Length: 379
Ligand SMILES: *Cc1c(COP(=O)(O)O)cnc(C)c1O
Image (tube, rainbow, N blue to C red; front, top):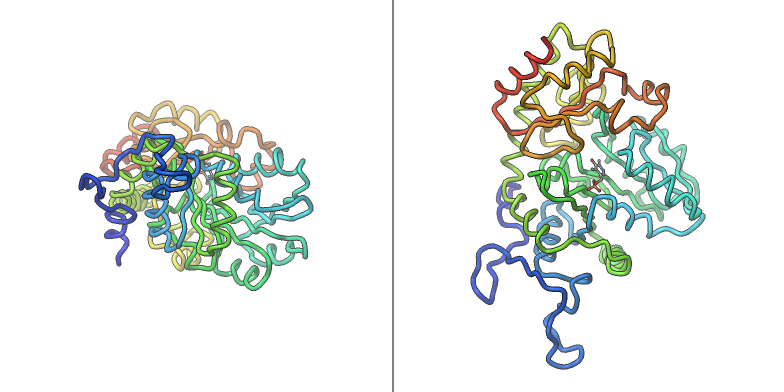
Protein backbone atom coordinates (compact mmCIF):
# COMPACT_ATOMS: atom_id res chain seq x y z
CA UNK A 1 0.00 0.00 0.00
CA UNK A 2 1.26 3.49 -0.85
CA UNK A 3 2.08 5.98 1.90
CA UNK A 4 -0.86 8.32 1.16
CA UNK A 5 -3.39 5.52 1.58
CA UNK A 6 -1.73 4.39 4.80
CA UNK A 7 -1.71 7.97 6.17
CA UNK A 8 -5.49 8.17 5.72
CA UNK A 9 -6.43 4.67 6.90
CA UNK A 10 -3.70 3.27 9.18
CA UNK A 11 -4.76 2.15 12.65
CA UNK A 12 -8.34 3.38 12.41
CA UNK A 13 -11.35 1.03 12.20
CA UNK A 14 -14.98 2.16 12.53
CA UNK A 15 -15.96 1.90 16.20
CA UNK A 16 -17.71 -1.48 16.61
CA UNK A 17 -20.25 -0.24 19.17
CA UNK A 18 -21.57 2.73 17.14
CA UNK A 19 -20.05 2.65 13.65
CA UNK A 20 -18.33 6.01 14.28
CA UNK A 21 -15.82 6.50 11.44
CA UNK A 22 -13.31 8.28 13.65
CA UNK A 23 -11.87 6.47 16.66
CA UNK A 24 -13.65 8.03 19.66
CA UNK A 25 -11.79 9.82 22.45
CA UNK A 26 -12.04 7.14 25.13
CA UNK A 27 -11.89 9.56 28.05
CA UNK A 28 -11.79 6.91 30.75
CA UNK A 29 -9.23 5.82 33.32
CA UNK A 30 -10.69 2.38 33.94
CA UNK A 31 -12.87 -0.39 32.41
CA UNK A 32 -15.57 -2.65 33.82
CA UNK A 33 -14.71 -6.30 34.60
CA UNK A 34 -17.54 -8.89 34.64
CA UNK A 35 -15.52 -11.00 37.06
CA UNK A 36 -11.93 -10.47 38.29
CA UNK A 37 -9.71 -10.63 35.20
CA UNK A 38 -12.70 -10.97 32.84
CA UNK A 39 -12.37 -7.86 30.63
CA UNK A 40 -12.13 -6.83 26.96
CA UNK A 41 -8.34 -6.31 26.94
CA UNK A 42 -8.52 -2.97 28.75
CA UNK A 43 -8.02 -2.65 32.52
CA UNK A 44 -6.48 0.75 33.26
CA UNK A 45 -5.58 3.63 30.90
CA UNK A 46 -1.92 3.96 31.89
CA UNK A 47 -1.50 0.45 30.49
CA UNK A 48 -3.92 0.57 27.53
CA UNK A 49 -6.44 2.99 26.10
CA UNK A 50 -8.32 2.33 22.83
CA UNK A 51 -7.64 5.81 21.37
CA UNK A 52 -3.93 5.34 22.13
CA UNK A 53 -3.99 1.81 20.68
CA UNK A 54 -5.39 3.15 17.38
CA UNK A 55 -2.63 5.78 17.23
CA UNK A 56 0.13 3.32 18.18
CA UNK A 57 -1.00 0.96 15.39
CA UNK A 58 -1.16 3.82 12.89
CA UNK A 59 2.37 5.00 13.71
CA UNK A 60 3.74 1.45 13.49
CA UNK A 61 2.20 1.06 10.03
CA UNK A 62 3.55 4.41 8.79
CA UNK A 63 7.09 3.43 9.85
CA UNK A 64 6.82 -0.11 8.40
CA UNK A 65 7.18 -1.50 11.93
CA UNK A 66 5.14 -3.99 13.91
CA UNK A 67 4.67 -2.23 17.26
CA UNK A 68 4.09 1.40 18.22
CA UNK A 69 4.28 2.92 21.71
CA UNK A 70 3.20 6.46 22.56
CA UNK A 71 4.58 8.63 25.35
CA UNK A 72 3.68 11.95 26.96
CA UNK A 73 6.51 13.71 25.05
CA UNK A 74 9.41 13.00 22.74
CA UNK A 75 11.70 13.17 25.77
CA UNK A 76 9.63 10.56 27.65
CA UNK A 77 10.05 8.19 24.70
CA UNK A 78 13.85 8.64 24.63
CA UNK A 79 13.89 8.17 28.42
CA UNK A 80 12.18 4.78 27.92
CA UNK A 81 14.84 3.66 25.42
CA UNK A 82 17.73 4.48 27.76
CA UNK A 83 15.94 2.59 30.57
CA UNK A 84 16.55 -0.61 28.57
CA UNK A 85 20.20 -0.22 29.68
CA UNK A 86 22.08 -1.00 32.90
CA UNK A 87 24.85 0.85 34.76
CA UNK A 88 28.12 0.20 32.93
CA UNK A 89 26.49 0.01 29.49
CA UNK A 90 27.71 2.41 26.83
CA UNK A 91 25.89 4.51 24.22
CA UNK A 92 27.41 5.96 21.05
CA UNK A 93 25.47 9.04 19.98
CA UNK A 94 25.47 11.71 17.26
CA UNK A 95 27.38 14.81 18.42
CA UNK A 96 25.01 17.19 16.60
CA UNK A 97 22.16 16.19 18.91
CA UNK A 98 18.81 17.75 19.91
CA UNK A 99 19.65 19.75 23.07
CA UNK A 100 17.04 18.01 25.22
CA UNK A 101 18.42 14.59 24.30
CA UNK A 102 21.96 15.71 25.19
CA UNK A 103 20.66 17.00 28.54
CA UNK A 104 18.78 13.75 29.28
CA UNK A 105 21.85 11.63 28.45
CA UNK A 106 24.45 13.66 30.34
CA UNK A 107 22.51 15.15 33.27
CA UNK A 108 20.04 12.36 34.08
CA UNK A 109 21.52 9.05 32.91
CA UNK A 110 25.28 9.62 33.25
CA UNK A 111 24.93 9.88 37.06
CA UNK A 112 23.26 6.43 36.96
CA UNK A 113 26.41 4.97 35.40
CA UNK A 114 25.51 4.83 31.71
CA UNK A 115 28.39 6.12 29.57
CA UNK A 116 27.77 8.30 26.49
CA UNK A 117 30.23 8.99 23.67
CA UNK A 118 29.38 11.70 21.13
CA UNK A 119 30.86 11.36 17.66
CA UNK A 120 30.52 12.97 14.23
CA UNK A 121 28.44 10.33 12.46
CA UNK A 122 28.79 11.86 8.98
CA UNK A 123 31.75 9.47 8.77
CA UNK A 124 30.55 5.99 9.91
CA UNK A 125 34.21 5.13 10.66
CA UNK A 126 33.90 7.38 13.74
CA UNK A 127 31.05 5.18 14.98
CA UNK A 128 33.02 1.99 14.31
CA UNK A 129 35.93 3.43 16.33
CA UNK A 130 33.69 4.38 19.27
CA UNK A 131 31.98 0.98 19.64
CA UNK A 132 33.36 -1.10 22.52
CA UNK A 133 32.28 -4.49 23.95
CA UNK A 134 30.13 -2.49 26.42
CA UNK A 135 28.23 -0.59 23.73
CA UNK A 136 24.53 -1.52 23.88
CA UNK A 137 22.89 1.38 22.01
CA UNK A 138 23.76 3.59 19.04
CA UNK A 139 21.65 6.77 18.95
CA UNK A 140 21.34 8.46 15.57
CA UNK A 141 19.58 11.70 14.71
CA UNK A 142 19.22 12.63 11.02
CA UNK A 143 18.74 15.23 9.61
CA UNK A 144 20.33 17.05 12.53
CA UNK A 145 19.37 20.31 14.13
CA UNK A 146 20.04 23.06 13.08
CA UNK A 147 22.54 22.50 10.25
CA UNK A 148 20.67 19.60 8.61
CA UNK A 149 23.59 17.18 8.49
CA UNK A 150 22.74 13.71 7.24
CA UNK A 151 23.84 10.39 8.79
CA UNK A 152 23.92 7.30 6.54
CA UNK A 153 21.56 5.02 8.49
CA UNK A 154 22.24 1.88 6.41
CA UNK A 155 26.01 2.29 6.89
CA UNK A 156 25.60 2.57 10.68
CA UNK A 157 23.20 -0.43 10.67
CA UNK A 158 25.99 -2.52 9.11
CA UNK A 159 28.12 -1.77 12.18
CA UNK A 160 25.49 -2.86 14.72
CA UNK A 161 23.97 -5.82 12.81
CA UNK A 162 24.51 -9.21 14.41
CA UNK A 163 25.83 -7.63 17.61
CA UNK A 164 24.06 -7.10 20.92
CA UNK A 165 23.68 -3.40 20.04
CA UNK A 166 20.38 -1.61 19.41
CA UNK A 167 20.29 1.01 16.68
CA UNK A 168 17.81 3.81 17.43
CA UNK A 169 17.04 6.68 15.06
CA UNK A 170 15.39 9.96 16.05
CA UNK A 171 13.31 10.46 12.90
CA UNK A 172 11.58 13.67 14.07
CA UNK A 173 12.99 16.04 11.41
CA UNK A 174 12.15 13.69 8.53
CA UNK A 175 8.79 12.20 9.59
CA UNK A 176 7.86 8.74 8.24
CA UNK A 177 6.88 10.40 4.95
CA UNK A 178 10.46 11.41 4.14
CA UNK A 179 12.39 8.54 5.72
CA UNK A 180 11.76 5.06 7.18
CA UNK A 181 14.81 4.05 9.28
CA UNK A 182 13.38 0.56 9.92
CA UNK A 183 13.79 -0.24 6.21
CA UNK A 184 17.45 0.80 6.52
CA UNK A 185 18.19 -1.52 9.46
CA UNK A 186 17.20 0.46 12.57
CA UNK A 187 15.80 -1.46 15.58
CA UNK A 188 13.97 1.51 17.12
CA UNK A 189 12.49 4.59 15.46
CA UNK A 190 11.75 7.53 17.75
CA UNK A 191 9.55 10.56 17.02
CA UNK A 192 8.75 13.77 18.75
CA UNK A 193 5.12 13.49 17.64
CA UNK A 194 4.86 17.15 18.71
CA UNK A 195 6.40 18.14 15.37
CA UNK A 196 5.34 16.88 11.89
CA UNK A 197 3.17 13.93 13.01
CA UNK A 198 0.86 16.13 15.10
CA UNK A 199 1.54 18.86 12.57
CA UNK A 200 -0.63 21.62 14.02
CA UNK A 201 1.42 22.90 17.00
CA UNK A 202 -1.26 21.81 19.48
CA UNK A 203 0.07 18.58 21.04
CA UNK A 204 3.22 17.45 22.89
CA UNK A 205 3.83 13.71 22.44
CA UNK A 206 6.49 11.11 21.68
CA UNK A 207 6.52 7.67 20.06
CA UNK A 208 8.70 4.60 19.55
CA UNK A 209 8.28 2.08 16.74
CA UNK A 210 9.94 -1.36 16.80
CA UNK A 211 9.68 -4.69 14.96
CA UNK A 212 10.99 -7.16 17.49
CA UNK A 213 8.27 -8.66 19.73
CA UNK A 214 10.54 -9.07 22.74
CA UNK A 215 11.85 -5.50 22.47
CA UNK A 216 8.26 -4.22 22.16
CA UNK A 217 7.34 -6.11 25.33
CA UNK A 218 10.28 -4.68 27.28
CA UNK A 219 9.42 -1.14 26.15
CA UNK A 220 5.71 -1.61 26.96
CA UNK A 221 6.78 -2.76 30.43
CA UNK A 222 8.80 0.44 30.86
CA UNK A 223 5.95 2.54 29.39
CA UNK A 224 3.50 1.11 31.93
CA UNK A 225 5.93 0.98 34.90
CA UNK A 226 7.23 4.54 34.51
CA UNK A 227 3.86 5.89 33.38
CA UNK A 228 4.81 8.63 30.92
CA UNK A 229 1.80 7.99 28.69
CA UNK A 230 -0.31 10.50 26.71
CA UNK A 231 -4.04 11.11 27.27
CA UNK A 232 -6.75 10.11 24.79
CA UNK A 233 -7.56 13.70 23.68
CA UNK A 234 -4.01 14.19 22.47
CA UNK A 235 -4.01 10.78 20.78
CA UNK A 236 -7.17 11.78 18.92
CA UNK A 237 -5.62 15.05 17.74
CA UNK A 238 -2.61 13.17 16.36
CA UNK A 239 -4.84 10.58 14.63
CA UNK A 240 -6.55 13.52 12.93
CA UNK A 241 -3.20 15.13 12.02
CA UNK A 242 -1.84 11.92 10.48
CA UNK A 243 -4.56 11.86 7.83
CA UNK A 244 -2.94 14.81 6.07
CA UNK A 245 0.71 13.96 6.82
CA UNK A 246 1.51 13.15 3.18
CA UNK A 247 -0.19 16.33 1.89
CA UNK A 248 1.57 18.50 4.44
CA UNK A 249 4.97 16.90 3.83
CA UNK A 250 4.62 17.33 0.05
CA UNK A 251 3.91 21.03 0.53
CA UNK A 252 6.65 21.44 3.18
CA UNK A 253 9.03 19.92 0.63
CA UNK A 254 8.01 22.01 -2.42
CA UNK A 255 7.98 25.19 -0.32
CA UNK A 256 11.34 24.12 1.15
CA UNK A 257 12.84 23.76 -2.33
CA UNK A 258 11.45 27.11 -3.53
CA UNK A 259 12.84 28.94 -0.49
CA UNK A 260 16.22 27.17 -0.38
CA UNK A 261 16.82 27.86 -4.08
CA UNK A 262 15.79 31.49 -3.62
CA UNK A 263 18.02 31.95 -0.53
CA UNK A 264 21.08 30.55 -2.35
CA UNK A 265 20.79 33.31 -4.96
CA UNK A 266 20.20 36.18 -2.51
CA UNK A 267 23.20 38.57 -2.29
CA UNK A 268 22.84 39.05 1.50
CA UNK A 269 22.70 35.33 2.30
CA UNK A 270 25.85 33.40 3.25
CA UNK A 271 25.49 29.64 3.70
CA UNK A 272 22.26 27.69 3.09
CA UNK A 273 21.76 24.26 4.70
CA UNK A 274 19.01 22.18 3.06
CA UNK A 275 19.67 18.52 2.17
CA UNK A 276 17.89 18.86 -1.19
CA UNK A 277 20.56 21.25 -2.53
CA UNK A 278 23.24 19.59 -4.64
CA UNK A 279 25.77 21.74 -2.79
CA UNK A 280 24.78 20.13 0.55
CA UNK A 281 27.72 18.04 1.86
CA UNK A 282 25.61 14.88 2.31
CA UNK A 283 23.20 15.41 -0.60
CA UNK A 284 23.98 11.96 -2.07
CA UNK A 285 23.19 10.14 1.18
CA UNK A 286 20.03 12.23 1.64
CA UNK A 287 18.91 11.34 -1.90
CA UNK A 288 19.46 7.66 -1.18
CA UNK A 289 17.62 7.42 2.14
CA UNK A 290 14.95 10.16 1.92
CA UNK A 291 11.82 10.36 -0.27
CA UNK A 292 12.07 14.18 -0.44
CA UNK A 293 13.82 16.85 1.63
CA UNK A 294 11.17 18.64 3.70
CA UNK A 295 10.88 22.20 4.92
CA UNK A 296 13.57 22.32 7.62
CA UNK A 297 16.56 24.48 6.69
CA UNK A 298 18.96 27.04 8.01
CA UNK A 299 21.03 29.89 6.58
CA UNK A 300 23.46 32.60 7.61
CA UNK A 301 23.50 36.29 6.76
CA UNK A 302 26.72 37.51 5.07
CA UNK A 303 29.13 39.08 7.58
CA UNK A 304 27.72 36.78 10.26
CA UNK A 305 26.73 39.50 12.74
CA UNK A 306 24.28 38.52 15.48
CA UNK A 307 22.83 42.05 15.22
CA UNK A 308 21.79 41.44 11.58
CA UNK A 309 20.14 38.15 12.52
CA UNK A 310 18.15 39.79 15.34
CA UNK A 311 17.07 42.62 13.01
CA UNK A 312 15.99 40.08 10.38
CA UNK A 313 14.05 37.98 12.89
CA UNK A 314 12.10 40.95 14.22
CA UNK A 315 11.33 42.16 10.67
CA UNK A 316 9.60 38.97 9.49
CA UNK A 317 5.82 39.05 9.52
CA UNK A 318 4.68 35.64 8.25
CA UNK A 319 7.53 33.61 9.77
CA UNK A 320 6.91 33.60 13.52
CA UNK A 321 9.79 33.56 16.01
CA UNK A 322 9.22 30.50 18.23
CA UNK A 323 10.73 27.26 19.47
CA UNK A 324 9.48 24.03 17.89
CA UNK A 325 8.87 23.08 14.26
CA UNK A 326 6.81 20.91 11.97
CA UNK A 327 3.48 22.74 12.16
CA UNK A 328 1.45 24.05 9.22
CA UNK A 329 2.61 27.58 10.02
CA UNK A 330 6.12 28.80 9.19
CA UNK A 331 8.33 29.28 12.23
CA UNK A 332 11.89 30.50 12.64
CA UNK A 333 14.48 30.50 15.34
CA UNK A 334 17.94 31.81 16.23
CA UNK A 335 19.86 28.77 17.54
CA UNK A 336 22.78 30.81 18.96
CA UNK A 337 20.49 32.66 21.40
CA UNK A 338 17.65 30.11 21.68
CA UNK A 339 18.07 26.33 21.35
CA UNK A 340 21.90 26.33 21.46
CA UNK A 341 22.45 29.21 23.92
CA UNK A 342 23.83 26.88 26.61
CA UNK A 343 26.60 25.59 24.31
CA UNK A 344 29.92 27.53 24.55
CA UNK A 345 30.41 29.84 21.52
CA UNK A 346 33.62 28.14 20.26
CA UNK A 347 31.92 24.72 20.42
CA UNK A 348 28.82 25.82 18.53
CA UNK A 349 30.88 27.73 15.93
CA UNK A 350 32.68 24.47 15.13
CA UNK A 351 29.40 22.73 14.29
CA UNK A 352 28.27 25.63 12.08
CA UNK A 353 25.97 27.32 14.61
CA UNK A 354 27.35 30.79 13.93
CA UNK A 355 26.02 34.10 15.29
CA UNK A 356 23.78 34.87 12.32
CA UNK A 357 22.48 31.31 11.68
CA UNK A 358 18.69 31.29 11.29
CA UNK A 359 16.62 28.11 11.30
CA UNK A 360 13.40 27.93 9.31
CA UNK A 361 10.56 25.46 9.67
CA UNK A 362 8.86 26.22 6.37
CA UNK A 363 5.09 25.75 6.68
CA UNK A 364 2.42 25.00 4.11
CA UNK A 365 1.47 28.58 3.20
CA UNK A 366 1.96 29.97 -0.32
CA UNK A 367 5.65 29.87 -1.26
CA UNK A 368 5.57 33.29 -2.98
CA UNK A 369 4.09 34.92 0.15
CA UNK A 370 6.80 33.30 2.29
CA UNK A 371 9.54 34.45 -0.08
CA UNK A 372 8.10 37.98 -0.14
CA UNK A 373 8.28 38.02 3.69
CA UNK A 374 11.94 36.88 3.70
CA UNK A 375 12.74 39.40 0.93
CA UNK A 376 11.35 42.39 2.83
CA UNK A 377 13.03 41.28 6.09
CA UNK A 378 16.43 40.83 4.40
CA UNK A 379 15.97 44.27 2.85
C1 LIG B 1 11.43 18.30 19.77
C2 LIG B 1 12.43 17.22 19.59
C3 LIG B 1 12.63 16.23 20.58
C4 LIG B 1 11.89 16.25 21.90
O1 LIG B 1 10.53 16.07 21.76
P1 LIG B 1 9.43 16.71 22.77
O2 LIG B 1 8.15 16.26 22.16
O3 LIG B 1 9.63 18.20 22.74
O4 LIG B 1 9.68 16.15 24.12
C5 LIG B 1 13.55 15.23 20.32
N1 LIG B 1 14.24 15.19 19.17
C6 LIG B 1 14.09 16.12 18.21
C7 LIG B 1 14.90 16.04 16.96
C8 LIG B 1 13.19 17.17 18.38
O5 LIG B 1 13.05 18.11 17.43
